[in-house]
Figure (cartoon, one colour):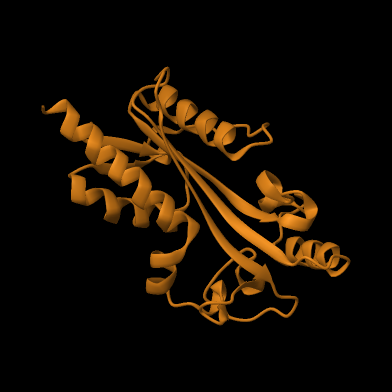
Length: 202
């Protein structure tokens, strides 16, 4: 498994995954090189959507595939927005500002401001892989009504981290790459993948 297709067209994700997987001498290739069509995400859980995207990309490319599904969850809202994070305020068009405004309004009615980011990564060796490698991580914070910072995207300007005393959007890229939900999930996935590689060479 020296080539893996990334089930995303996000250039930022591609660069990050390419850098991290290079330590295993694995090339990460964007799904756009295989003209993979957009994959539906009909499920209410991150893991089901990530698995669907990974199998979809593998089916169309003939290669192992990696997918992630991520979003923000508010404790007081029973986990919403969850898998709907990117389109919480609608899709005509998708808007970070509208999503933030909607979540801010809903949390303004709640005493509990705890929120957490979720990232689920799924790697399939082939489209019908019965044992996909799954890694999941959460990043805990609090909702801050006043936006702060310009380094992030999505809900980052409102995602306040008490330990760092800043929002995710106020962090440097290096700091975010150490602490974020995606960084944590990637670390778990790489450790699992290294273990798998070691087992295949025993």
